[in-house]
Every structure is written in structure tokens, then in C-alpha cells.
Length: 411
Ligand code: SAJ
Image (cartoon, rainbow, N blue to C red; front, side):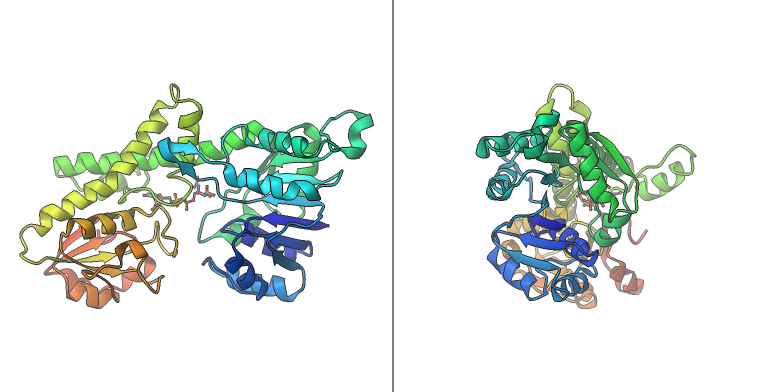
């Protein structure tokens, strides 16, 4: 079977190379010419553990080819970004572009699978866009029409950055077709490379399931973040509090932090809020609590910095969570940006997973440094990300410093 994967980012590229390694003939498509050139030489444009090895093997085996244009295939997988725009409205223009790009190549019997996290109704819209573009195709379940029909389904990705390659295979998958036949055929395909359970539903429920999972996590993190605010106010150690409360057999509180980052948990709940604003009140509030945290951290740093004439602040970590290089929607970046704009002091930034600072903080008073040097030269140590490598920090170095630990790392 030939598989055409549209979008070679954090989901599309691992999926394309996994399928190629499993023996499928895979054609990857991306609009980013630089990414296409790198991948066609067996290299990668994003960091994910072991992805480079996998892409190289897939390209060298001749099973993975990439270009800017789709080709005729049996199965099309759409894995493009679905960001939000102003007013927290979902933006599905990349899904539309991807659908229009594959439409001329579709043939009867093809399966089109949407993997991108999407607002409710997107899979149905894809179907309508295809039918508008291609009047020779249909999706009718009637026996007479079956010879020119195509199948469309949603199978939301649910992998965790940092563990993508393992989770692509091992996670349970939800598959919802626009009709029963679409679900069945898509299930048959995923069964060939997924070892987790495959759960069947319809397209709208599959879309909602993905948004629900990430909203669940966001609401639970918001609970932890709200506790951290209450505890600060009441002079109680929130980390100790949570550790104690979690001894209860039915309590499992997550960890507070400097805010919620990444392109999923901080985005997807807005799709539900947008779809049902009157109903999704708790989900909306949770978003506000989590988005409030970076500004709150900035205020705490400002307060502590006031006692120094020329404060130097070591900012440990920039990525949106531990042990990855991904800075997208990172609350740590937001905090450093904010501190640098306010001119709170000199900022010694430590991020072992990057080679240069993001453009927004390439400023005279902001430097990228090695951990020990950054701490030694600082008055305040601001821990933003709980990277494993920070466990090597000699705690004696912190003795004379003011430590603001947003993750309870040194606790
Ligand atoms: N965070 C906390 N406290 C916690 C847990 C997380 O502050 O106790 C923060 C992290 O530091 C980070 C943010 O939340 O800034 C999100 O991190 P995450 O590890 O919760 O999630 P992601 O964005 O890496 O991946 C999530 C996963 N979804 C769920 O766990 C429900 C993943 O399975 C999804 O595939 C992914 O979103 C996605 O692509 O939607």
C-alpha cells in the first residue's frame, strides 16, 4: 500500500518514518522546502529522541520519499497544525489547504485520515470540501455507489513529545469515521502498526475525545496552579501539601508550574470553549488560571530583584516542559521575554537543549550560559523547567542565592 502523509512536523514525520520502517511505501509532503530537503537527505528539522535514526533508516531503505506535492496513494494522512487565531478561535486553514492539495490525487477506494487535533465537525468539513472539488467521487454507503466512493475518518494523535516513537505504536487509538465503513477500513489500517487497543466511534466523538483529554489535563493542572497561588498567599509549601494530599487513595493532584505550554494543552481547550461558550465555563476558567501563572512568576521575581542594585538572574530552562527542546508556547520563554522587556536585571539563561536564544530574547542583557556559570554569576536563581540535567547542580552553589523554584524541583 502507498501512504501519503501531508505535514511532516512533530506528528507527520514520526508517523511517516514509522510506516516506512513497517514496510509501507510512504510519500511525505510538506510546504516547507527546507524541511523537505533535509528529510530527503535522511536528516531532521525537529528534535525528538531517536527520530533522526528512524528517518535516516526510512529514507535509506527507499520506503520514504518526500516532496512538496502529494502523489496518488491508497491512504492519505493529514497531520498539519491546527493553531488558534485571535479571540481563541480555531484556525483550520492548514487542514483546508492540505485537503485541497490531495483532492486532485484521490481515487475511488482511498481512505483520508485526519490526525490533527481539530474542532468538532472538521472531518465532516473535509468530506464536503473533497466532494465539492471532486464531483466524480462520493461517500454514499449504498451498494451501487461503492465503486466510486472514498472513506474519511478522524484518528486523533495522542503522543507525548519526548516519547513519540514509542507512543505511536503503544497508545490506544480512537477512530471515528464519517460512516461505519470509513471507521472499519481505517481501523484495519491502524491495526497493522498499532499494538495498543483500537476504539471505534464516529468522527465527531473522536474529535471531541481528543479535546476532552487535553482539557482534562489542563483543568487538573489549573487546580494545582490555583493551589500554588493559595499556598503562596497562606505561606504553605504547596509541594509538601500536594505530596501529603496525594496519599489519599482517591486524590491525585498534578504539579504546579510556571504556566502551561506546548501547542496542545494550552490550545485545545479553547476549541471546546469556542464550540460551547455557555457550557464550557470550568474549562474556560482553567485556561485563565494557567495563563495567569507566567505573569505571576514575573511579579515574584520583580519583588525579589528590588533589593539588588544591579540584579543578575539565572533562568534555568526555556522549553515548555522537561527534557525536550520545544520552545513553542513555552511559559518559560514568556517569562524571560517579559523580564527582559521590563529590564529587571541581567538574565543568564540556561537551556541545554538549544544552541542559540530565540530571536525575541537576543538582547544585550540576556545571555545563554552553561548551568554552573549562570548560577555562580547570579543573585537570583529562577528554576523554570525541571530538566533531568539540573539534578547535577551542586546545591552548595545555591546557598547564597535567592531561589525561586516554579516547579518544586529543589524541594
Ligand atoms: N504541566 C504542569 N504540571 C503537570 C503536568 C504538566 O505544569 O503536572 C505542564 C508542562 O510543564 C507543560 C504543559 O503542562 O508546560 C503540557 O505538558 P504535558 O506533559 O501535560 O502535555 P504535552 O503537551 O506534552 O502532551 C499532551 C498529552 N496529552 C495528555 O496528556 C492528555 C499528549 O498525550 C497529547 O498527544 C498531546 O498533548 C497532544 O499532542 O495533544
